[in-house]
Length: 134
Image (cartoon, rainbow, N blue to C red):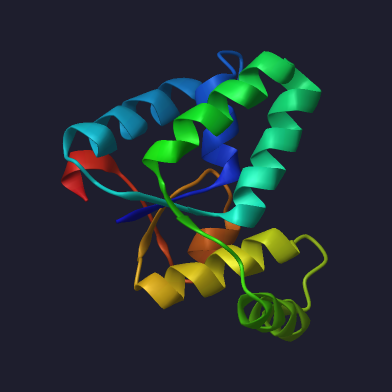
């Protein structure tokens, strides 16, 4: 199982994004190797808002339709509380509550790899998904 971050979702959707080609390649490899892709409800919201704002409603709706293929973890009160505590512990202005929620969910599912272009995942100890070589 691989975690799919908003940074990768956006890179997949925007051909002008500097990570677009790498995102397409890695996403394709994950699908080919039948890897399950994990997201949580805050990623659905964050990615949809970003896509809608930058690329339009059609791009956002396409993502939501395709998200049915993912393993979706719906954030609980406990998840939220753990993410808030993690945010407090880390004390970094640039680290978001959504990222902390992702870390909590990844640990819950014992997922070590993230398809992400956000350095916070590596800083937290998770490996970047590198495709078939992973």
